[in-house]
Length: 391
Picture 1: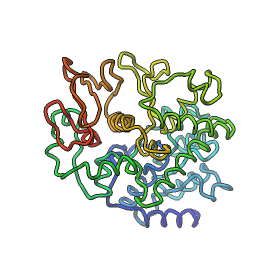
Picture 2: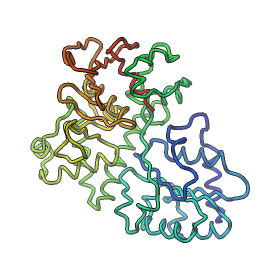
Picture 3: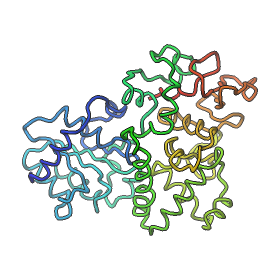
Picture 4: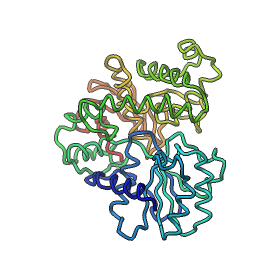
């Protein structure tokens, strides 16, 4: 293989941290022929791949890691590189940032079909849709989606707290009380502001996060949608509206007036932002699917984005609900409740501050009050932070 690619991989492996692995590390089927990992920028997809390679890499050169945005691929193709690697005895090819390479889907298909013994792993933007490529990868690649740090992972990565994950059943049974952590609230506020992304926790965190948001909204989405840069500005304005709002109920007319755009394109804008991991659409409990007509509320995807986009402190109620939805949606089918805030299967949840009363859920079976600013569960009163232990 070209020495520049080998040197690049070696340098990346030298600097990858090995002290903590994300939840997806033990979920991905590493023995399969083609696996794609998609997710928003900045959540650790590259690190996860490099950690696996570093654990399994040997001197027999059977593993190759490349990034599709490397200068090498300005004059060389992914297909030719993969062919050469396989001919030299390569077994496992990792391709990072695949969405940045033209004709990526066709070239992956050709590699898959041409080298039955070659395993291919790739990462891509969360807006990547393999069904829309010019080759049929949907029956070849197993696709997985990854999201940012849970509160549990944040405590592990930045504070050395090795805590077990809790299921929704564990949480409502109050098992968070048995976790070996004193005063979880001392960490919770910092997590809400800067803990969702595994970025350095220093004075430049907000600048790094702003870059993630800007690149996603102003570059990734317009390029994917084949639209000009003005789309990025409109999307940024839409996110700012959501950031300033109490839990935002979609009104196409009000959004249209605020952004001076046609109501007909708002649905497309919302779906683009949702797919890119910038916002999260909450469906009504009585309906299935993801149609915009079934949306009850719109949140920013995570609390870090809410703080980054807010000129002042974001609405506290919005932050609480954003956290709950963000942390629980990975392993649970979360819907809007007609009588409270959220419904998961037959469980109803009302989210509020420590003085939140039980009136909202009085007389409702399997209903719980989720309170911020408390450490312990008591009966049907549950601490908000505990829902960050779900993965």
